[in-house]
Each structure stands twice: as structure tokens, then as C-alpha cells.
Length: 331
Image (cartoon, rainbow, N blue to C red; front, side, top):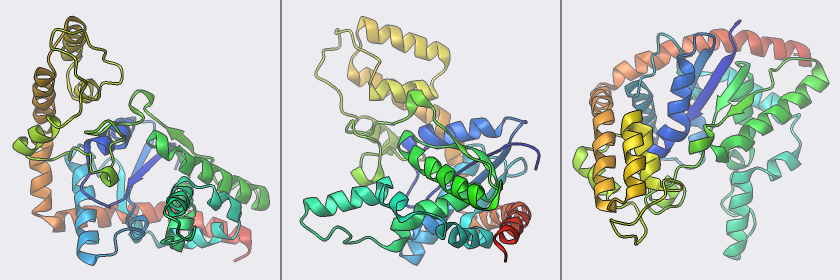
């Protein structure tokens, strides 16, 4: 492959939300339109096994993620769109990389450290509830990134460490066996690096403060009107900086609409009116994707066919790459 690879994936651990879209999906889709790059997009289903161990939910979440990407504009004829579990080469590389990765690197991974810290606060054993999938998943993520020689990985600000770990692991391998892997670079849309949720904290399923991308209009409006605001009066001038509502608005509104909203913030506008305008632009921009999403979810065999075709393309790249790795280590 001569083109630089841009790669990203999403764990199927629940219904996708606006934070997923703004922080990762939107910038990834934008990069996919660059004719100078090869886009690779995958559903990280094996990563989801750490937390989703119900077969029905696991299957449903996978379809939801696939339908989301397709509905939001991912063109499988122009990119490689696949399911992680269909690429057996990734799991083989995962073991090879595990043998070169220092344990200390895994000890510093954010997800593991967060779990240990939470256990200590509850006076539990440091590793209570920690399975080996959670502990070593950065290595599997490195295999996802390194095997197709990804140059760019769009991520949220809190996911930068994953790409840095992949770079470290690639460096260990390259120093040991010779230049093999491309060192990946993270790509973060800085102005929307962390997307606040309904309560002002980072939008996250674990906080229960998300806005589902394809919520029906009535539900979408209800969620938007739950966004926490300050006690300023409608006539008070307001700042657009750090405003959850303004951040959401500018991601879906036109440039002219954004300029007008900035003016209204400065002059004074009631939060109820802002929420109504936020609902209007979100519902307007998501109406067509919502329809496509619902149609795909009613026809899962179409999703299966798209993912199978994508897996064939991905394996065509990954198989020779793994053979090169195995040759270098002596297999």
C-alpha cells in the first residue's frame, strides 16, 4: 500500500452517542475523504469482551456500531470497513507483541490504573475485577494499529495514550528485529477533544449523561433540555467558551448560524431558546442518517455482507504483513 493509512475503531459497548460522533467519528470520516490516504475503520468487538459478556448484547452492539458508521457517511467502496474478530492475524500479532512488551508499560495504562485506584477507594484488593483482557488490551490495540501500518489514528484526547503505547511497542520490535512497523501518530480535534455531557462532565455511557446519536426527535429534544446550564438571566451576556450547548450547536449548525448564535450569546439569550435552537440543528442534520440507520438495523444481513467484504480487503493487507513479522522473529 502506497498511501498512508488512517485507522480508527470503536468498541461496541452500547448505543453510540454524540460525544463519539464529534470526538472520533466525525474527524475520522473527514480524513476518509482525503484521496491521499487509505481509510481503515473497524469494529473493536474483541476489546468489548472485557465488559460485554452477554451474547445477545454483544451481537446487537456490533450491528449498532456498524450501522452508525454507515449511516453517518462511511462509504465501504472507498475505505476498508471490517470487524476486528474477522482478522485472525491481529490476534497472532497480539501474542508476538506481548512477548516484547514490558509489564511496567501495562501498569501505566490509564484504564488499569483507574480500576486500581477505584478498588483502593473501596478498600478492595488492587486487582479486584481486573481480567487479563483489561490489563493487556493496549497490546491488542497496538496490534490493531501496527499490523496495517497505520500512520494516523484519530482519537479522543483521553485515548492518546493508546497510540503512544503502540508507538512504544513498535519501537521495541523495530529495535529488536529491524525496521518493520510504521510509528503511528494520534490525530485529535483539539477544540472538541473532550465532549461534555448533560451534566457538564465528559460525555460517557458510564456517567449516564449521553445524547444518543439517533434518538427519535421527542427523545432528542428531551435530552437536550436536560443539559445543565448556569443561573444567568436571558438578558445576561453569556460566554461561548466552555458552553456545552454552544459546542453542540457549532458542530451541526452552518457558519452563518454559528456567527448569529455567537452574537446572541453576547447580547443575551435565554437558555431555553438556546436549547430549542440546538435541538433544531441536531435534528435537522441527523434526520437522514437516522433513517438510514433504522433501515440498516432492520436488515442486518446487509451489514454482514459489507463487513465480510471489508474483512477480505483487510486480510489481504494484514496477512503478508504478519508473514514478514514471523519471518523476522524466526517462525
